[in-house]
Image (cartoon, rainbow, N blue to C red; front, side):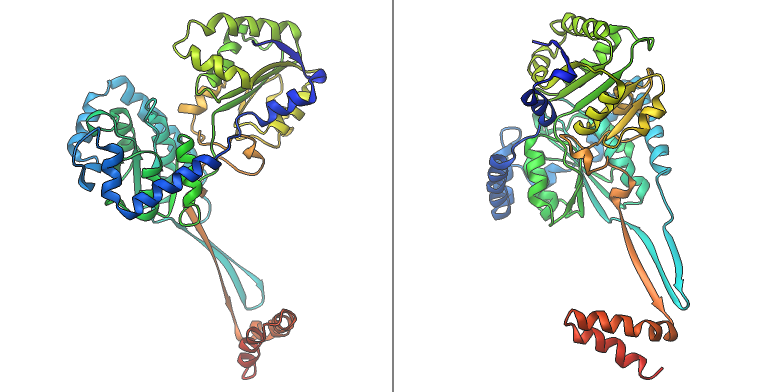
Amino acid sequence: MLVVEKLSTLRPERLAALLSRSQLDLGPTLLATQDIFKRLLADPLAELNREYGSLKANLSPEDLLVGPEETAKAVAAMDPGFLEALKVAQTNIRQFHEAQLERSFWLSETRPGLLAGRVTRPLAKVGVYIPGGRAPYPSSALMNIIPARVAGVKEIVAITPPGPGFLARPEIVAAASLAGATKIYKLGGAWAIGSLAHGLLGLPKVDKIVGPGSIWVAAAKLAVYGLVDIDSPAGPSEGFIIVEPNMGLSPEILAWDFLAQLEHDPQASAILVTTSLTLAESIKEAVLAEINHLDRAEIIQESLKNAAILVADSLEAAFELANSYAPEHLQLIVQEPFFALSQIQNAGSVFLGPHAPIAGGDYATGPNHVLPTGGAARSFSGLSVDDFLRKMTFQQLSPQALKDLAPTIATLARAEGLICHAKSVETRVKNF
């Protein structure tokens, strides 16, 4: 049952439960994933038909690729309003990520004759996992493919679970095609991740795999990390809302913000903090009044165990809790949102003021919705153009610059017992 609680009197175990929320134990799933990988590597075709034979008999690698005909049918089946919404979102996402691009080349003369710099190169091949089992998520196609395209990745391989008839969800095919995927494949879970990492079943071996998914996808990505790169850890969705009274939003509107996070998944979480007991009680009543009328009522009832409506003594106390929580999404519905932003150290993405709901960032404002969860925002950032770039350093020395540095290099090399390092410098400068 949802009740209003006072932040200053929360029991330590209650606070610890809220802070730990949806952190998942991937151990058993990792073990099961390793078994899938063993079968997949031993006989990819047999494992493909074992797992997906019920959708289509005698599957071959050629069946995995979404061809031009399936793509055309998917786009033609879409409502024009849906396609227009994809295009508007695409434009905003592209423009935001284009603004992230930095200098692709720079150098500095750090001392006379010594040039040092950095050159940026895009990754060659990237795999993008797009969930599609429980529901289609075309927004994930936009958010993962567009930054890779902006970064200059030449080969962007989208992959999504097949459905009846071994067909991909048309919404995902349409979105991935519009976003700029070079190829789209039909495969899900650990089978998709393993095939991308190892180059199995006709899929290209990629350099990096990004995109959200189930606990099976999360475990599979961790299992192949090192063989390929992956994006940040991603678990169930979460939102943290700080709201001052008298912000012009009704309790019903704030209830929808709260419920929007909880409808994602039974493991999702939501925290709302205000300094007004009256407002907190009104929001709680609005939340309870709506739940049973919603299609996802069962999911929300389950995720409420990870939720709380709290009354804080001050905004400073609310900011402190938010930084400890390190939320994926943080709404700051306060009178001075940019001052509030200056107080925040840990969050995936921040939504400022009364007119910036989290749903805007989920779909169309431009910043990426692939964000760290479960407290990982303390050390990870959301997906960006940088995730698809490699930054190589270089240096060039004149004879005099090397001669000037030779004593320093040789002294440090000998201190570490690396005589050949020292000799590679000392023998060079003898002739200068």
